[in-house]
Length: 299
Image (cartoon, rainbow, N blue to C red):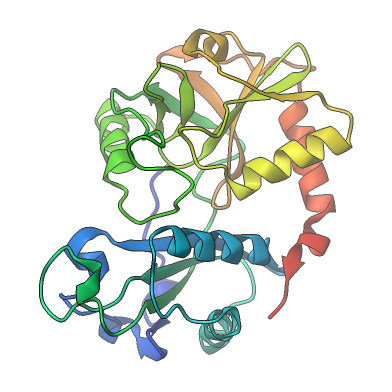
């Protein structure tokens, strides 16, 4: 499933720095750290009619990532929330919206790698677009295994939600050339890490498994699914998982803010049966929406 341009987004307003701009005027400097070195952090938010799902958790991760990268002069949480509200209000948005929240290290005084060249403070970008879910959660997705390994903490810790996504993009390029939807990325030992854009779960004999969050992002939806499973009596374990275990699973599904819970129906040409009677994903989807109101925040 390929994302398409939505004509409703033609005239959207986008927050950059400290105010809103029309889409065609929303820009950052060529000296901005995001342009110079992919030196920025980001969050993907989903706006439902009930509000923004897990907003506080996303902001926690944004600030944790900025701290890990030693950003200076970061805008307050109040400022970020006000910028999000002004953006969605200006665009008259109330649901089915994806918000790309980006915080760059800011503009440099001259081109270079040294963060000491960033002397104007961080730059906030709030890009809100009308978007459907990234995947078709009815028919599911087909995936391959990428030769591109997911970074472990000895290279670039996945707990930093940074915008330097070439590692993941190269995996997605392989998926595109293979004519499938996404690519599985392994860790440096050959165990499953995640897809190039979402976390992975498998179900075997009624038990839910997911890879350790060592070489993958410990996603917010991933953590929500684990919590829901444990609260509703579905056994759930984190451990090292191999490709063979995924090939032979009763169910496989991906989780993410932009995809919710997506069935994986094929891995490397092997069909995942998603056996009748093994409907853990469906159960968890129901539980998720039962708890949606309490997990959403209206601004």
